[in-house]
Length: 376
Image 1 (cartoon, one colour):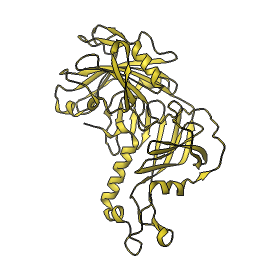
Image 2: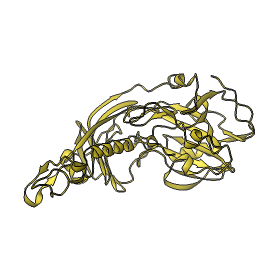
Image 3: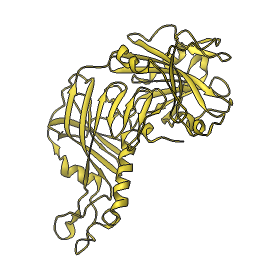
Image 4: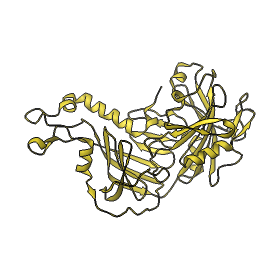
């Protein structure tokens, strides 16, 4: 079972656009009727030129990266138009129509808007209740300061009263302001353009992050997430853990996690369960998770989620693993994975450069399992 919030707010907005098209099929398929009905539909690239034209500037000065922010967006989907026409003669175009949405983020784990998320829990667009998810940094919180674009900017734009530099990465374009916020995201099929940006400086403390999880949570229809003693581990399985938090980071806690999947709902023995150590340093987070399937069958992308730009890395005692982008787009958080034995996995995910995650994975110490001591 795949859950839309693993791919962030973008997919939730695609679902919203699909619903809009279902309710107004003619508008989505062909635009307005009449003499202009055959005018070509504006591309998302043309829409970007229209709503955020380039400006001339020498550079975008860097300022402090915010601990929290809210961005209101106009979102355009290819072929989603009410049929408004601009231009004359052969230059006529039916303009793409915008849908207003927003994303509010308190780094590194809290998000609201099209997706509601906190550490270990998420609710997709239209979902009545949250469900337990793998404990990871926010997938839809781009971090271009940590994962900078590979090439220089192709130009500059003025968006939501802020100057941003445009970068082309693959088949997408991203305009990044001096605070490291992505104000424009253009793919071949969609376009997000910021219309209002509000920032703040207060990050959640480790105690604030841990407090909502102190009572634990177990519900057959929503998954399970319970705090455990940091010195305890499942019996009968080798545990992989750090001797101390990564430099500058603080341990939030160790948790026993059973994310909601189809296997949980169907009560099969292919359920994936894990132990996660969560560390934070201001706006940054690192999660070390190790677990497996109850039936000890193989654990792959179908269970852990897809990695973009996946490649092999040497993880020391864990053997050869894989690294890639687990968040949304080129600036999403990074993750390294290993499968030290049949049916077992180790994941190190975080909002730090990949080489730091590899070093952490190489530093994990193998210890015999003991007994889980729950703290709730």
